[in-house]
Length: 285
Image (cartoon, rainbow, N blue to C red; front, side):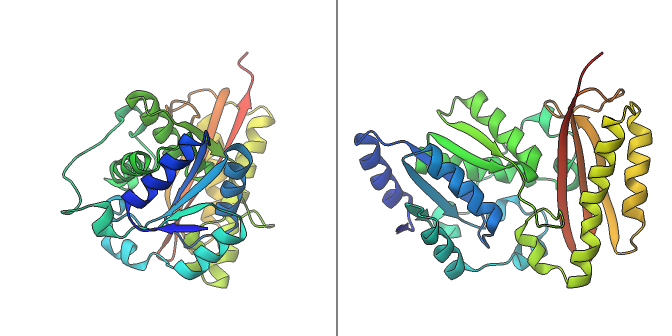
């Protein structure tokens, strides 16, 4: 496994592989890797000839400096996991390498997909995501890029970003990986106490209850949201950030529950913010 710390090193390897007719799969991460990331690596390994993983905690996407400072880091463990999964190259830049001269005062927005959910709860977050992704795509030149659908809004934004700016990259969304109890795997889970982890299972329980209500024929999003919220409100440790039922393609609110549907939740458990979602399809009558 090759470890590169500069864009020039990455480009040298990528250009060589491209001259050999190899396709490049890319998984951008912020490290503290877990089985969810490993599944993305496996998707890339199955589809592309070479797999590149980046590990970079991007300061541009944190609207809360304390959240950035507390983000867990385990570079040694991350590299071991990448090697065990047969990743071909790990790009491990530092902040000065990614943003020479500091984070640029450039704002990238896709307004129609940034009007709700985390775009509102975390101002500036997705602008920072699009900034770092654009730079990483220029460095890695991937044919395929893999993103977990746990961050569903991010997945939609990056897919639209690539379409709009004609990046020659196929953006592939991969299903959320969960613990046996249903908790979506996340690097932030490491900051939860055992009690908080148990309380966090209510997130998935709420999503599944909402899904079941819709599949049973309930059409009113207000009623479904009330039922879902009751589940979350049953814990004094959970503070709701948002609970939304939206069109899964446009992120527009729904008046009638039909078509492609996204159920999305963000909560705080203690100081840790967790997000999760489910998508489902209901025939339009």
